[in-house]
Image (cartoon, rainbow, N blue to C red; front, side, top):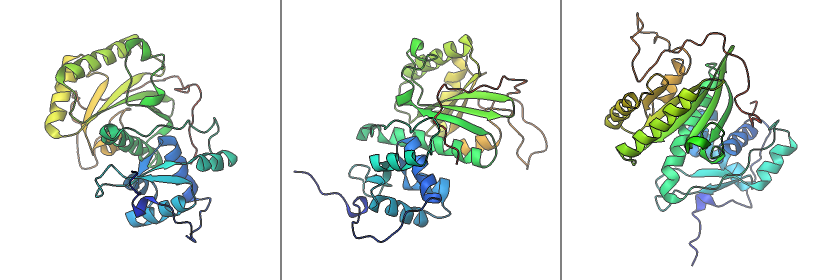
Length: 293
């Protein structure tokens, strides 16, 4: 017997709300790009309050442009939203994606959902940093698009995410690993050793790694493993929730001194100072789905 969906996940056929071209379209573009986003993630990107985000997402739901999903039986957790085929057609007709609408992503299994939403927290942090003028985000791809990436496939490595960021003539590809503390030390060490091979092979544009970690103690352990694996020169570990601050300080470009500091701290394994000089300006990916918002 199929359990009926909760009211907050059901469209209201009698609703009289209206969907517009401005912010509603921008919200849809981000949901299509990411595959799915939570109410809080949408609010962070587009709205001053969570309540306003809920109202607009309800309008998109009522108009059949998104589907709402609960996080299993945990009704206290945030609803997350995925685009419908109607939304993709609606955006395609408006030429929202110059290189074509990104392909549909399968929703993760319940046991993988927290990890998948955590990766999208990182995606949101990169988008916010771009909108604050820290860099141009030319592309962001998720693990489902990276299984056959020519840089990583020979190493049997699939990053959780891969961003292409540009500031002036300096361009970086920033790999993302989101660590919830479920993998063993041996597994992490093997993963970082694969990353070391990727770094040592070299690439244009150059490659960096951001490891976002749940918990302070786990973050310390990850930093130690990065150092032992010989990748601290290229990699940075940050505790979950601090990604936005790191990007604001300039990562993966030169890390700036916070305004309340009078001197620059010495480089450390967790925050490395990068000084790109005359990096070639070239797209990080062949056919970028980048949205110009």
